[in-house]
Length: 585
Image (cartoon, rainbow, N blue to C red):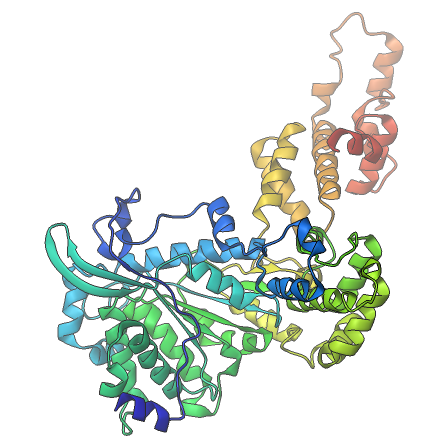
């Protein structure tokens, strides 16, 4: 019957990601808030960065000897690159957020707590209708600790790959039988990933949710609840009931740019439901989409989410810099042409120009170039060149060429026409203004955004700049202020050595101007000193300073910091740019 219903219904569900199912094994928790909660204690340990990198990396089977194999075999080996995953900073950030999100969300949803059990007696239709009181409690007495965040970015930049790689570090279903000597029979769903329904409707999402649970747990919820007469208002409390019953750790919705303003009351209704899941029921929600979804999320959902330090993540195309070089150098290792083609600077620049820093396009271009090179009659001619890359892009990647041409021209008027690849500036501005927390922005778009307090700071750079300032004599408080000021006043992709030079300049300038500001009786010798000559005493009385007195730096200038700095350099009181470069490089 369930199969018949699914076949008759246009909302047929196909699992987008299937994870592991395991028997519960409980581990002692170090963090107090995570103790005595079977949903948390059965999770894998908290992963450190190096563990995340080693677990999510997917490298092709490669060795140099494979270059000697036959052409057909090598063509197959090149295909491995399509599954290649090189861990980048975004992968680590997403795993960190998920790790905190899942565990913190479970804190208020301990299945053994009386408040959690009380929810089933009250009924989730009443709980959702009542919402939460002024202290954040629902009518069952549960105060949500859940949060939500969004991952937005350019198509083809690896948003889905990054979230799926992180989700698969956790089992999808954990089977509980007994906890601390007492029966505890429960099928816990740690994560559930759904694609937004093709028609963008809330009813379609409800059907997908029920079918997903059935496919993972072997239940028949879809057959039981998704009858032809089932309305959205009937299905939403059922979803909340099942999410609580099975301890859903996080609900991930991909392709949210497909949300429709027309279906089932519009996108606003679906986003309001996600907000209810987070704030009333306590289920964390992660939304993934292209820049087109930014307009949707700048409304009620962004304002309703709890502030928990997660923050949204925007993944734009890579810039020509450290990240791009790292990615391309790592990718270039996997080359099966009979002749080795070194990664030269012209090739780097060509691949960037042809892909505009979009990872998916760069990877496909590299695969196609190798296949094309292998078609040469003489194996000695199998090499990747600038000309070959351009030829491959022109002949085999025609569909993306118009979009790439717009990106190359960098014309805001044209860029606004391709909202999957580039956000409208006024929409981005509203999105940042309405965000409840700082947003982590990575890639090309960061170089074009003015710094403000809603853009998450690069903590690694900040810490290094603070250390630099302290090393050159600044107090810890002053060092933090200087590092903050330098980061806010520079482009994000500015060369780090240049940033450090600016920090050192500010440290010396601050020290020098402090000396300038000191009262005269601290720097001028006392008239009681009988060894001071009458001429020098007369100079001081008339305000004439010694040639190396730092206060000379403020004379004859408009007292602006740059002018004072130049005079201090001339006087030899602080080092010049060249001196600083030698000190910090």
